[in-house]
Image (cartoon, rainbow, N blue to C red; front, side):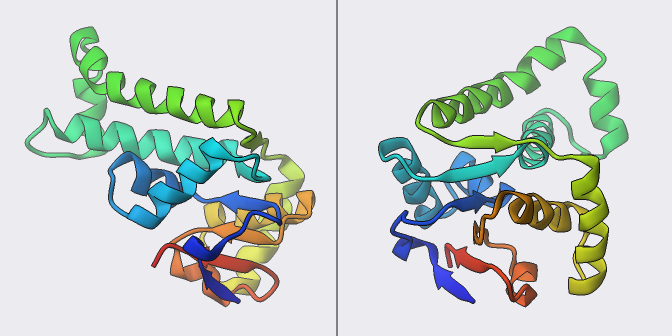
Length: 169
């Protein structure tokens, strides 16, 4: 089932996918931005995972490095980051966004660990739903914690029948 994220009332536990944080970080979607402001303001039962945080940080590094590179490949970024001055420039906005996530944690956002058992279940979920492993891992963590709601703009989750998908579209 799919619903609009702006209608989420906060009564249920909800898992936040990486794209919601990225919408906020890049001010790309006002509904995602408002949703995270709600996490800041109220005691929502909001969850994410260490894997989501890694996805967000990785994409922020790529975006930040692209401000200094003409060509953005992983190899070019790795080469660029060998210089400590470049690292300082690239990681400054990434560290600032990490501080924002820590603020959300102060307001009750829980960052869940990803376990080996989650990854075994994720493989099953990936095969059953035609998902990439990272997305299936999110579902496995949600299942382990009994979370049936997800905030995400990833349309691949529409095919998953046992969750309620809250999209900022």
